[in-house]
Length: 250
Image (cartoon, rainbow, N blue to C red; front, side):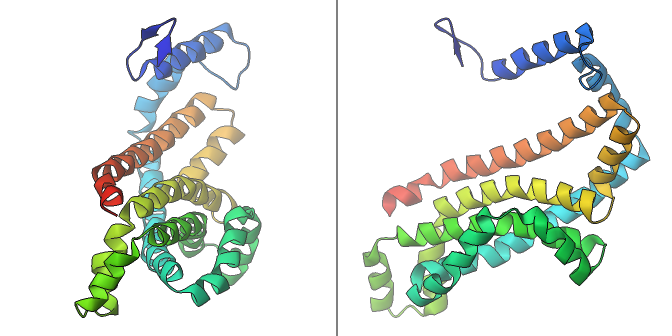
């Protein structure tokens, strides 16, 4: 970040926004925005409670389960779409529809089909994340140099060898990019699922704190959620940079 010609440290923008948040909170302009110092103090109180730890465990379970299924299903489907024209023409319109459609509208259908428990929340999380993973895996396969595939066939590589040694690794930069965006979308999915399907996890805390106008508690839990999503996203971005040489080799 550069200000008036001076380059500031990497986290300076967060510090500036934090200072602005504190000033607005101290001015008492709205009850919705308490001072940041009060939110941080509340955060240390909240994370020690049994309710928060239970909510964190429930949210983490639904989130990681949903992301797991999105990755395990999305990457192979995307690779198959990239290498098989017929399959690509059959599935691509549906993938684009679900990617652009408001998936929240499907939540009532999932509640009817799978009930009001954790299963529906996991499926909602998966649906939010899987489509961008499929598209990125497909895009990665489309970028593969055909000479790599021809070389694999000339050395007698079977379908599994070509999948595991050529297509996956050559498309890895795009796959990781899709997973990173999918993880961000999965955060939305798990919270929407916990708010609309079954009031559990962080969704239950958001509902409780907002209904009782405990805004410092509300923002404290929201900061934890943002911090977890940001940490996972940055870790995946780091992995993207580490495997960027695959794209150059390709």
